[in-house]
Length: 145
Image 1 (cartoon, rainbow, N blue to C red):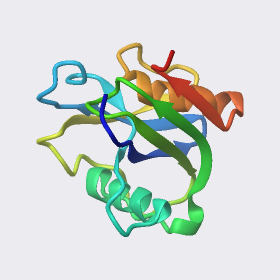
Image 2: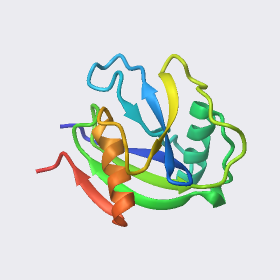
Image 3: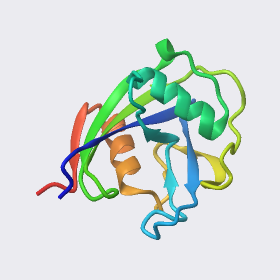
Image 4: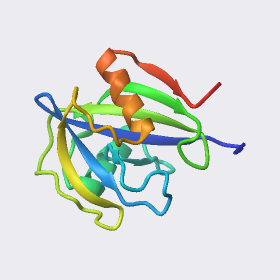
């Protein structure tokens, strides 16, 4: 097992009853062609709010004020990558710009889905965060015995 845990930030861009998902292009076949939230690893020296806003800008081109991000769920995941990770999920309902695919090498499509009608072919980690958010739960485990 890895000797550290990564911290990821995930952004739920919510428009009415819809959430924005991106279709992954990944060299790892476990994740290639699966839907995921805009997300990424937290950089050293970066707050989780700044990281979430940065990832949304990098991946889908929207500008989010850190104060508009609301923490809605945390997932402690094992098996969703090389190292275990702590995923912080943030809801945002206000941003500037229209979401577009800003990383075509890592993403093949950007699409809105109903929060209660998510695609079956989602990365389990993202699905767990959205499920916890919808249930009003603040914490969940994924992949731990």
